[in-house]
Amino acid sequence: MSAYPSRLLDALRGRDARVITADGTISDSALSDRIKRLAEDLDSAGVRRVASQLDNGPHWLILDLALRELGAVHIPLPTFFSSSQADHALKSSGAQCVITAPHAPMPVGTEELAGMLDDSNLAYWRIAGDSQALLPVDTSCITYTSGTTGRPKGVCLSTTALLEVAGSLVQASSAISPTRHLCLMPLSTLLENVAGLYATLLADAQIVLPTLAEIGYTGASGLDVPTLLRCLHRFQPESVILVPQLLLALVMAAEQGAPLPPSLRYLAVGGGRVGPSLLARARAAGLPVYEGYGLTECASVVCLNRPGANRDGTVGQTLPHASISVVEGEIQVEGARALGYLGDETLPEGPIRTGDLGHLDQDGFLHVTGRRKNVFITAFGRNVSPEWVESELLSHPALAQAVVWGEAQADNVAVLVPRRGDLDDAALVRALAEVNADLPDYARIARFVRAPSPFSAANGLLTSNGRPRREAILSQYQAAVDECYRRPPAVVVSGAIA
Image (tube, rainbow, N blue to C red):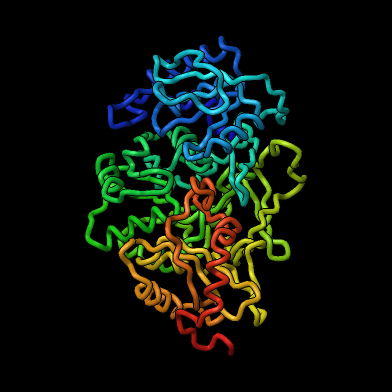
């Protein structure tokens, strides 16, 4: 890390256009001045634990860097958090205030508007009471991950760990050294915070910060692809970070004849397994896609494919700051790590046990095959990792979301969200048959339940980074799953009993 600035503010090296938005550009000097003024205002207010509920944009970046400069704690709350989730986050973290957009409604848990900050671009809301929540020493960021329950878990991270990961990402992308990064994921997502903001600053590159609406997001989980394409063409980024669903949207658009900006040189994809067929389609569409892997407890990314070291079907080689071992099939990571969790749960000493299954090949590329706790065993004793099957399902243009299950059953069921509402059940049967053709018999889908609405973070069926909350989904659709097992299979699965 010695090659990088000890403070993020030191990474502002005099660019005339560091931040790019739909409204214009912000220079390094203007950005630095606003960061310092905001840090002084927060210091005068006596706050050291600051929560925020902000859209993507320069105000998010300015607030975050002001808190880094102040040595304070930032608690970024996803905009899709329910009132009860936001209230839990504020109470468990001991936040002293909430920062919002100027005309946002009063956030849950606050008692009054205390004033305006950053030239009236930010509203400062005081929180009632005086929480005494204890934090690990050196905590600078508390990021919330929904995990498998509705109550988000707070993970405490230090600036040192965040910058260590960001520095590794700069090294990993040095063969390309993108000069303009477009933030497509919410900045409250740790991956975009570390890889999109910090790594881009350390690399002395430009940051493009459109609002979520300008990217094409609608509500908690909707995406308008034409708006996304217009955003990409307008800003001509060289690098972006994608979740698999965003990658699929771009691939499908390209396959339907939509031109993609020629500027794209590095598309990092993570947050969920990417099926080999989707990667192949992305390559055919000319998209320079590189899959990676990480987790919150390791301060985000630990593995990444990169130019000159790329192998489809893997999540890449270990980044310089980390080391990986596989013990009894479980991936374990050493290196940058979280300081701990909020509340009583502790982070055990030693390597972080990820709960992910996988193996390292002879060249050091990591293959992730699924989650240990998600593996189910069929009635014929076959172990099935549902993430593998789901990634194949989601590569089909008819299927938008899928969760697979088959514990102790003779065949498997999928809870499906079709990509278009006008697709009837016959179209879904055809789609499943096409996917099944490339799967071994024990992993094929013989039955399905059609979900009436998409899984989303707002309805409690997705985590904050877009992963399905399996227990919640299967619980919600348990009656329909039981009913479909009382009927003959919807899809003929040859050889399933062999």
